[in-house]
Length: 305
Length: 87
Image 1: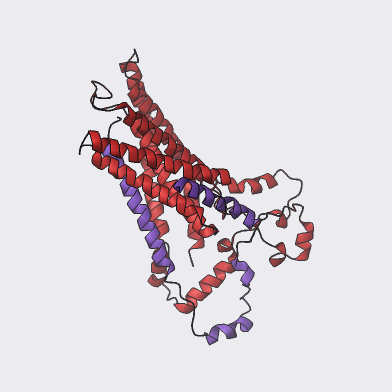
Image 2: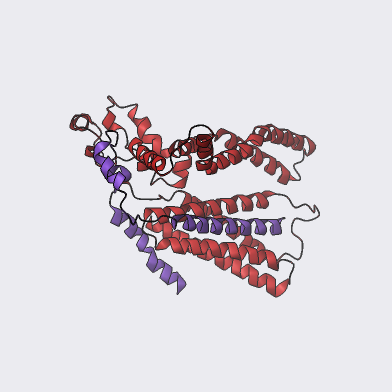
């Protein structure tokens, strides 16, 4: 963790330095053509740097995890865009790099791309909080505790402290899956759920809400379910809308790739070939990762109160 | 230079704006939580009466952090790194 965050601060500082240098260079040599884009990029690098430096002082799981999620999302977006732009062939087919472009700027651009990808790889695997222990005596009877065969001290389900990558790929269920191969499974062997998923917590919240605002049957109930889950519904709709075209994207890119292979037998312009191959791969990954939706299913269950 | 540089830069600034907006939104939501200043008498009575009220204060915590100090101490070392870079 220490080396991880050290590296993050170093990377974001390097990115910012590169961007600042590019900005100064373009302002000095080129004038206003590329000045605005360099200013925009420097703003972004500065924002990432501020977030990283701010996260250094955060010693609560809540604040730390908020920063981690923001930095992960931003660097993922930036890495994907940089990568896509880097492999896209230039529309003016005469020369990929015109004479005006200066080699240092190009090298800096690729260095920034690499540093964004590295930053993303580090921050996406950073844990969002320390491992947790919940005393089993709070929820289980003494007999259940005695029957437990798994005596690991870290007994809470890993969702609160899981890194972003672990969360999206459901690494925290590994412990439950491993139970399947053990000799005997007792109730106490299962990881303990975090507070927001416990029935008693949900019951208490629902009770408080119903006391505060008594429920009228009919449309009132439907309206309240909708308004409480509006964020969940919105995310679900957006994910569905973005994943639906991917079913057709994969065959589309295969067709494009075959057309390219037939049309360019000497492999003179490999750029588009790479673009189609990688786009096909990306759309396949998105289609197979539809389990993102079950993340939302958890969210819905928790917010019906 | 690879193509579409201006579009890329605009998208990055857009992401910056969305992210900072999300920070502000979360902060403004949090400020709406008020501590109760008057005791609700009905709540206090119901604790004994309601047989379904099995919720205990322990149910509201995820768990005790294991080696919390060690976990965050690793992070706090960063302050020195941060200061050295700044200097």
